[in-house]
Amino acid sequence: MLEQKLSILLVEDDPQDLELIESYLRETTEFIPELHFAERLSEVEEQLSTVEISIILLDLGLPDSRGLESIRMLRREYPEIPIIVFTGLNDEEVGIESVQEGAQDYLVKGQIDTQILTRSIRYGIERARLVQEIESIRIKRRQDREVDAWQLLAGPGLSSITAQAMGLKPVSVEYPKLFADLAAEFGQLLEKAIEERIYKVEHCICEELRNISEQLGSLKAGPRDVVEIHSDSIGSLIDGVTPQIAEAVLEEGRIMLVQLMGYLASYYRNYYITGGQPEIPNTMEAHRRNATEVERQT
Image (tube, rainbow, N blue to C red; front, side, top):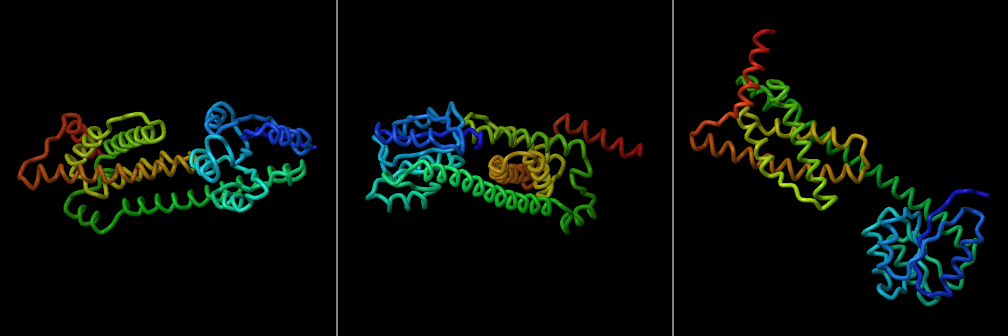
């Protein structure tokens, strides 16, 4: 006899069906059920906001949602929670479609007993775990490929060799302390962008991103310098986080990279194409003088 506790959300509005399913769950010796109840789909969100649910048992004929729309909503909002649906004797086709929409299994009312329900719950949870594990591996591999690609772009190439021949070294080489500060600032802005995405809070990062571009422009930075800052920040932010968070970091990072490239291009257009000279912030000029002095002493 297993002593594992499973938190089960039973979404059913028919009192007789509810009583019968609950009795089956109470009889099982495979796990200890912790039951939570909802009669409408609108009550599910309240339950899930207060309780960590292992699996949802869902009747497809609810007062406020019928058929596959219930599955679609739950899969969209709570993709990590496995779902088993209950169908009527004449609705097996709907059950099959529910599995195609993401449910782990379907059970026909009137053909359920303790053993069938217990096995379905066990298999449903295990299948969902394996699917999530496979998806996490797939996402992680794609993320690794993307990070490797950014690092390859940021690495030495023909353009950087040509730049060095003209006396222009990468910012990370010429001004390592400044580069580290700019990468850290870019990473902080990326964290704010993630907060906007996940928690729906507002951060105005455009001006701060433009400020980074002006600092890069004053250092005569090029596209590889921007990619290197982006790659350095991405690498530190996705280390040790869930694949889902890492995916959000990569997506927001791509957007910010394009924005930063655009701001830097505008900077050069304003100051070089028009014949002007870049304005170097006092703090930046001080950093540059300090770096030059250090090089002279060494």
